[in-house]
Length: 321
Image (cartoon, rainbow, N blue to C red; front, side, top):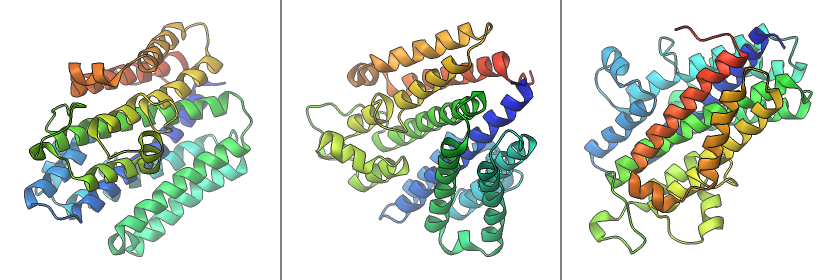
């Protein structure tokens, strides 16, 4: 496969996954902002979302005041914000158009229709009328795109590069979400298994919202069958390979697809991906929390970024220096 074709497929998938994850993060912030809380705590939530996306400085230049209206507008429809849902869906559609002949008709039509429908909804102010329903629509279109891709495309290199893009982006976004939200709700402190003091109790609804943002609330109940505890949320989203959006599950899929497209120069990238997979497979949440969750997730994000650079070097159009 031509590296340019692989590059378009990889980034088409990454941008669609990024749009979904942005919608998930915005939705959880929107839902928690409706709960009884101080103005400072509400603002902290929106600042955390900007921090996840590393856009705090750019947002301050354009909008100044951090509030729900400004942040949601910035992250949904701001055409100058390269990480907005508008730009993600536009970029996904443009990458799909560039390799239209490689995709099935159903995959192309899904990408194209998503972009057209998104712009229609914005013109009709659907986002302003009901943000929650709008975010659900974005998530649904991402689910549809992924399902149509797996259900209609030949299981060849094209599909593998799409899957690599999807799971690399998912691993990155889940790590960012967990890092910022865990730190915000616990103050960075580990809640031991011996119980918590009243001052350390974390609002059930905030943790529930975080789990719902990764479609993990029902899964948590099924796996742990007890009250929601921060360390269990961390374990679910990091180490559980049966949790679809966990770091472990994303890394497993990434390694499996990298193995299927391996070439003579990708050995080092595959080795690093395999080592990351092994670290997650044999990791323990008590050890991770004892050494510091923030440090662990920062290192994980560095390793994921390193894998992205390696994948670009080995298979795709090289990233600009």
